[in-house]
Image (cartoon, rainbow, N blue to C red):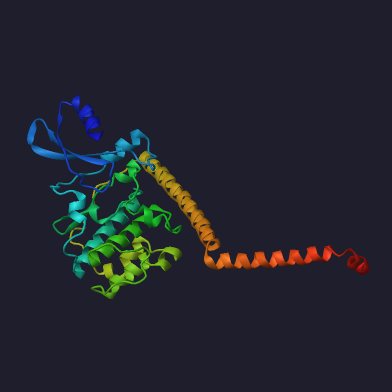
Length: 322
């Protein structure tokens, strides 16, 4: 269906031509990729992504088009599908400590920049980070504009303290830092204990984000993470900030969109919390211990009613008592 839509759209475009559909590069079932070319530049190839709008799409079509135009593109050569690249790797190995420090600092600086600009993200994970030399770049900044769900939504939607897009970015950074450290994602969230790491400072950051205590009591902000020993002494060689000017009207639209996204998340978390309470209550009442208690109570009540019935059956005794 996506191929039909794309082909029909570009049929009337004299400049562009659809070369072929690409394999499933990303993890989303409903997001498709196509190889495109400019007709007057036949050797140049571009990649087009096509995705249905998600439940968190609150921008108007006009604001959406304007916001997407602010985003830049990058050059890459995607080859293998998502599952082939990331499923069941033969060798699991984390990054070296200096790489963890440098890449982590760079990613946090990007998140801080986006937060200061009021641009919602919420889609940080390892497949959305590319390396250009020794510089990290984040992909899929448009996902929040399109209203698409986050890769880690099933995790952070369970914790009511993670109720802002800034908090979501911190939580996602915790997942990413775990992968950079150990070469694989965590088995469960929250994480009870961490394997040996290249430095105690790495575990300290992970504990501040991914433990049960952190998710109940609150996680650090991006600014606070930048001040922690793991990242505070990292010197960034490329300190040039990108040009990213958002018009005032679009800023207001992005702010309203962000508030709507956070409101829907809060409502979803409330429903999950209510469902958990109901499930625990049903499980408690259905346990063998509770069944035994109810049987004993039923016998006791039955015995009391039986005694009362026998007492009512002797009117002479009742008259004497009267």
